[in-house]
Length: 215
Ligand SMILES: N[C@@H](CCC(=O)N[C@@H](CSCc1ccc([N+](=O)[O-])cc1)C(=O)NCC(=O)O)C(=O)O
Image 1 (spheres, rainbow, N blue to C red):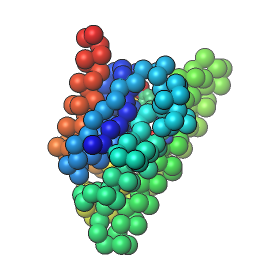
Image 2 (cartoon, helix red, strand yellow):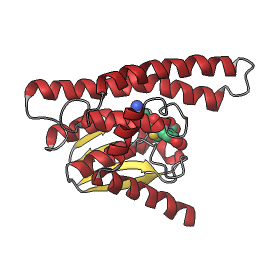
Image 3 (tube, rainbow, N blue to C red):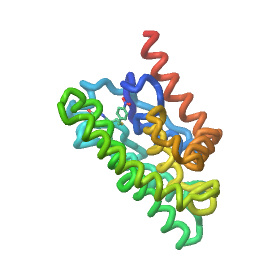
Image 4 (cartoon, rainbow, N blue to C red):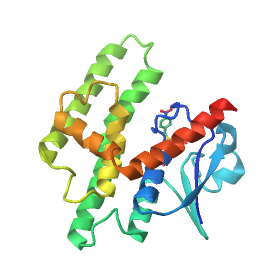
């Protein structure tokens, strides 16, 4: 049985922004059942979890004698072991993996930087100017991605783990207004959210938050 770890009570209020969501989505896309071990912030820093993830974070993935951390690596592992997230053609498969890396580095870096600035530097005198600079970096990447995607449904033919990661990264911009200038990217994200596997994953993580909030 596959077991992943997730927040006992996600600070995002069940919005599906924590990275267990990406692993849940991947497992749902390939039809693999999984169990979830919920962790408090305290438990994440204790030896038992540090043995699974040296950085004391979620998600982790355990199956038999395999333990993984890093959500991107976990999604890649799932995609390599089960059909449905990577093409069988070798070149198309390699391109899909490139898009995974593009999502997690080139696209996500400025988005994480914007979030860090907003949460940690909002009281600094230079915050407004810094936010403009960081948001322009995001807009540059959005423009480049929008130009490449055009009116296609997915980044490179059929839906892949590259799209799963890219949609997950772009969802971090929901509510920021930054996607408004790129209608094809907004439609792309909406297509990801409309996938039955996404909806099952999202509902599962929301149920955890609601249960924790009720308790
Ligand atoms: N690179 C690693 C990063 C994992 C990571 O950032 N984990 C976060 C949760 S997902 C990132 C996240 C956190 C919170 C929100 N939120 O909206 O509240 C969104 C996403 C974590 O465990 N944080 C606790 C800690 O570091 O002590 C991966 O992709 O697995």
